[in-house]
Length: 223
Image 1: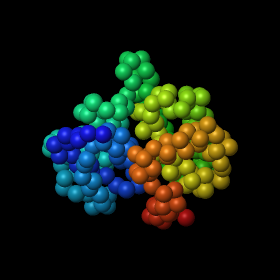
Image 2: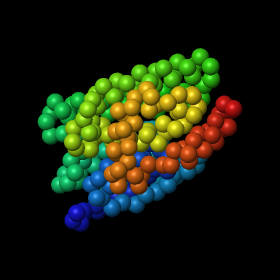
Image 3: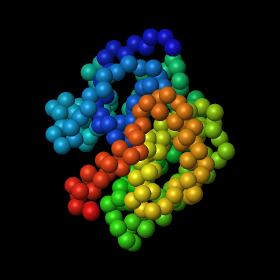
């Protein structure tokens, strides 16, 4: 892969964030060199607050001093800003629309539902587990027998979903179920994605994610 002209790319991020990991995977797929700046989410930097004054959240991609916020928007920006290799969105308008639909579905459903799995007990947790299994089965249906969500090419929907693979262990351990039993094709897809260097080098160790969630549980008084 040849040199990529980045003209100064900075990613404001937090190590375990599945949303930030989307951006890191997209940048790796494109071969873009960038500076990773770890944010302290308990004491957010002036640069983060200035770059994302509306939501004050990571990730933020800063390209030539211009901030781009929200992970799926950042991934689309990366695809358009460096169009010469590894296209992340399909060229066909309908396929592109479908990819955006499923990425949006993932964005709105998985993190929120997964959070309820470790925050709640009893009926609330059982309801969240049932909902998450339903979400994963829908995604498995969309994946079908394809290698990736876009077919043979790793792309936008894969990037939207794959960071959550490292959270599966936490979801399973907290709620006492097996994602592989519920959605075996999706787990096999996750293993295929992990064969990609961009994914393997980005995703957090599942046990470290579980330890991090343990700290969150103590902070929120869950245990």
